[in-house]
Length: 180
Image (cartoon, rainbow, N blue to C red; front, top):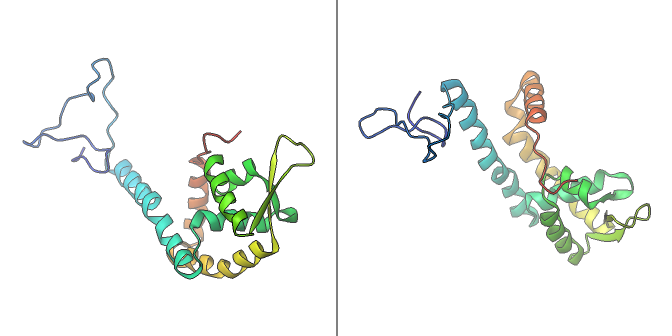
């Protein structure tokens, strides 16, 4: 094992010896420290998780005044039948919580990009619907986002890499806590 890095390797004392503590919990079993291969995978993933959203959001903010999450919400609505989705489904598709989505949709409503209505099929649910103005916003922003996705992610990967990335993303799929 190596020095602690990314919060995953075994901590080392000042003398370079592995520490033997269990995190202050006497009854805990010894943690399974990461080996070099696991550590490389973990640090690569956490770097992507922390840095990639900013790389994709920056051009959207600079050119269109949109956050990445706002763009994802508008984009998913633009691709939905009749440009509308239930809020819970939209939160899932945009990889956000219902409370975060609710705040973003409220801002989009104030800008005239989205309207919310009760679902006529089941009044317990709320639909978010993209307006023509909102569609125009996402239509203009889409090429900017696509260029960033290609430049930052896809162009660096070959077909095998892309399939592996899709497979790994599916295995690690994380669902927001409030997704029903």
